[in-house]
Length: 254
Length: 338
Image (cartoon, rainbow over all chains, first blue to last red; front, side):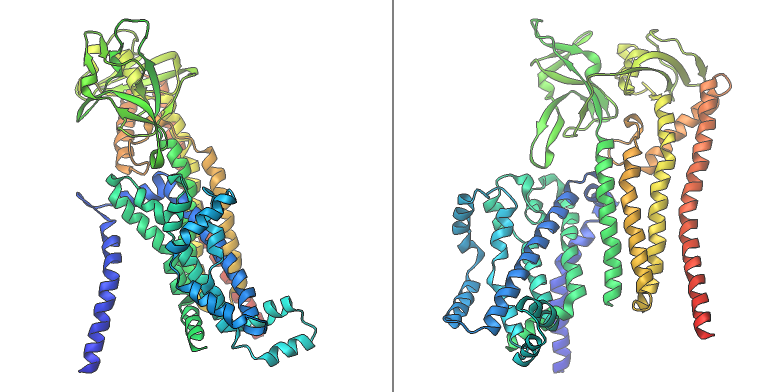
């Protein structure tokens, strides 16, 4: 009986989670006259404006994910394997920073970007998003699992720090790296507040924000755009689901 | 599972890149070409020619160009309020001076992006006019060179390009007939020929996509043993990318005449069947008395055959490619066994 109810509950959660997406998918094929592909034609063929935004957003998210990964690898390795004064305090500070919502850092970011004359450029979205503590936290925990003896052996074989990092430590922590890459990509992909705050022109908005600015008469086109927006996330989750779970578990266990 | 997901998303990615390139060209092709007219500011009250009015099922419309913003960036047309103009005896009386749309290459809709044609080049052309409900009174500006049932052919010299049905209509018909629902359909045979000449290029595009699709299906099957077939899968991927690189080269050469394109969807097959059905049935009737019609019908036959051959070639190439790969694989397996 207990098993039946837990199964039923799980099924209910799945249905409730999938319902909005199913609604979007079904509704994107429906018009007052019946089934139609008109909205798909409007988004994918009639004009490149939606797809151009999609590719721009992909480019931006890839830049953010790659930058965040690179910084997190170095910082995570430093925290995990080097002892320096104030390490624990800095790590504690990092954890506190993790708890700050994006909205809190928007104003200081805006002022700094203004000083750097980067407002209204994609750099205003990319630069602040690269320096985010979550990746460093996950990789610190992940790199701690590498035994020091392995690093010593690598150094005895003549490995420099960079070589050791990229040829020894990183391959041993693939799931951690994938997890950081995935989370940072999805975070950048779903970015809403930063483009509204840092970009003036609506034409510059990534697709996550631009969706809200489509003409009100084009609700069905918005639904097709939603499907377009879901595609990268769907791919990443289905392709890397094992690494994602492993990476999160690893960070929690440590 | 992972390999299949990758395979499916590679196809989706290919499709998205393909659609992006295609949509750039479709957007350019679907933009209606218009000729503007200006109300003469030296006159005491603004007025323009009566043929600037557009008629459709919803009534008459007058359009003005304006720059759009945001998602609707670019030069667009917006409908003028009906209170701002009135129909005079031989002119359209306006409330405001400024630019108005006079002719368009295809039916317009408020908010459409437009391409304004100002420096028009002229060329000789042959116009086909079809009146399903009987030939109305003509203006007499042009004399038909061939006539059969409800279709007329006109040879015109030094006429402005691109062809616009409304302009042809106002040349051939009396002003009083312009608003008539039975005003007929007008086509340029040069545009029809130009459209037909593009069919092989469209077929090349389709054939390339079919080849990639066949390759993908085969790769999907091969992906079950991805480690064994890694080299082949990479080779297929390279072929897919190369096929994608060729797409813009083909698209650059595709130039479909605006007057023969549907109002909303370039893929509207029913529209093409209806329009070309009407054109070719009229040409078949006129073929007895007109050399242009006979030549165009022969050209159409040639282009149709060429199109079928090119599409078939794409499928043939895909199948042959798979067969050769399998043959090579079987031979190497036999050699290994020996």
